[in-house]
Length: 294
Image 1 (cartoon, helix red, strand yellow):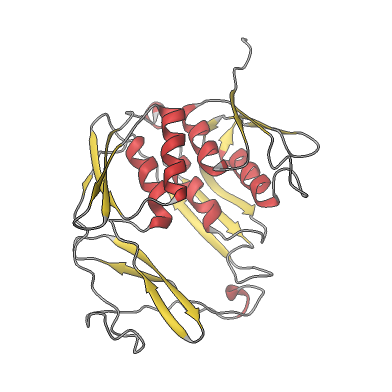
Image 2 (spheres, helix red, strand yellow):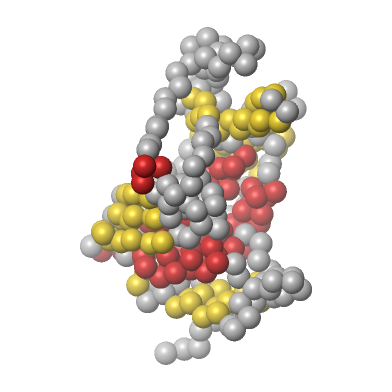
């Protein structure tokens, strides 16, 4: 057996994207100087939890962390998927931190994934609750031409938002007792559906009893730009065209990681007439060989 060749990186930034791409590209990863100069150096509890989660859904995955947590060796294994998997996510990060990597990795697993994620579903500080995630497997992803944002359906149902349209429906998901978690709290997430089938996350900020709606623009909101870029980069060797709002810092770092691991580069062209950005790129043609063999 030959010596393992590691891709060497530094710093704590974009750890999730690096682990996702390392796993799918079967590229061992060596990350050094992880918050080495911080008062509290090294990996955070939620980052260690994510690594343990990848160990559960992958076979022959090797994770080595030094004593200070400032150096990580990650040797990816085969994505297996599976049923009846349970993972305690802790309460230092929200459940979404773990969901995005799981969805991307599990799509290319040998078997469909069914996993129960516990603790970080509920409100802070004690969390509680759980999420059950099921992800089917695919052989490959198709390229997309997704430029049409469509017309927003509006939010007139909220009296404090009079400038929005009339045809809106707000669905509640009320839970009580243990199902609601271990800490009291409440909140609202608004997801706007457009006439072309886009779903855009709308952030409501409550400041001094005023509500401000922030529309991110594009076919996805800025929070999910990185996810969309990764899916396009992993698609068949055909050109994908997508429209997003202003590129977020997270989205830009994801594009850099995609170049580093997959050698896929997107052509970026601003559209001044709409204030959006159009990205055009050819997928790497990633195929799920494990699923095909099974």
